[in-house]
Figure 1 (tube, chains in turn brown, yellow, purple, red):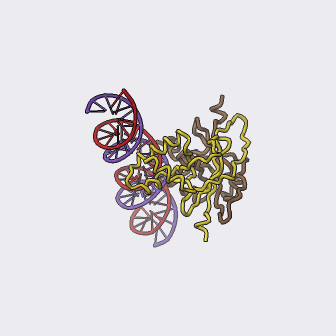
Figure 2 (cartoon, chains in turn green, yellow, orange, red; figure 1 turned 135 degrees about the horizontal axis):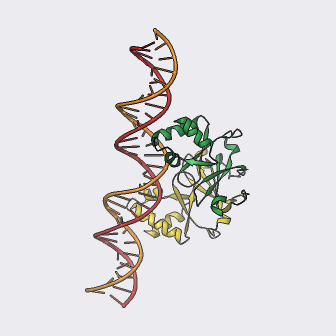
Figure 3 (cartoon, helix red, strand yellow; figure 1 turned 30 degrees about the vertical axis):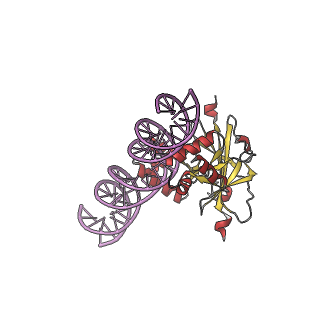
Length: 119
Length: 119
DNA sequence: TTGTTTTTGCAACCCGGTTGCATTGTGTAT
DNA sequence: ATACACAATGCAACCGGGTTGCAAAAACAA
C-alpha cells in the first residue's frame, strides 16, 4: 500500500491532498493513507504544504530538498483546478521581524490560475 | 452585537479567529458571529487572514488597507500562543511565475515565536 | 398597530483530520 | 512448520471549524 502511494506521488508534478489520494485508491481506508503520509513525512520522504485550500497537500522531497526551514520554496495554488505546484526555483524571501520575534518557518503561497486552466 | 464584535476587533493588535471571538462572547451564538464576520468582510470592514493554523483569522482594515491583492502585507503566526500579527511593514515579494501562470493573490506567513512568548 | 425586513439562536450537517481498537499480515526465531 | 512479536490495515467513531435552513425575536417603516 505504501509503495502504491509513493509511486502515485512520484509521478505527480503537483502536491496531492489526502482526499485526492483517497479518490485514487478506492480500496484503501482513509486512516491507512493518513498514517502512510504521516510516516512518510516523519521519515522525510515527503513534505507537507499548506496552500490555504483547507487541505494539506503532500509532495515528495527532491534530492535538493533538505526540508530545512531555511531553504523552503514557494508554492502555487490554482484557484480553478485547486492544484498546488511546487515553485522549486522560487525561494522564500528574507523577512525582517520586529525585535524579539524568531523565525521557525516561512510559508509563501501564490494563488492564481495555472497554465492548464488558463487557455 | 455587531458593534461589540467590531469594538473587540478594533482594540486588538492581532487577528482573531471565529473561535476566539466566540470565547469572548459567551452569550452569542457561533453562527451569529460567523455571519457578522462575513458581512464585515463583504463590506470591506475587515479582512481575513489564512495563517495556516487551520482557523481563519480576521482583522480590521487599516486606512491604508485597500484589500487589494497587489498591496498585501505579510503575517506572523506564533506557534506558541497561536496569535497572528499583521506585519504591515513587510510587503509580499514579487514572484516570477512560469509562463502561463497568473497571480491573484500572494500569501506570506512567517511562523515562529513572538516577543511575548520569547523570554 | 400592522406588516416587512433584518438579526439572532438553535440545530444540524459537511468535511478534513485524528485516534482507539480489533483484525490481518509479515517477518523472525525455535 | 509452528509459535510468537510486531507492523500494517480496516472500521468506527470522535473532534473541531465552517456552513446552512429554518423559525423566533428584534428592529424598522407605513
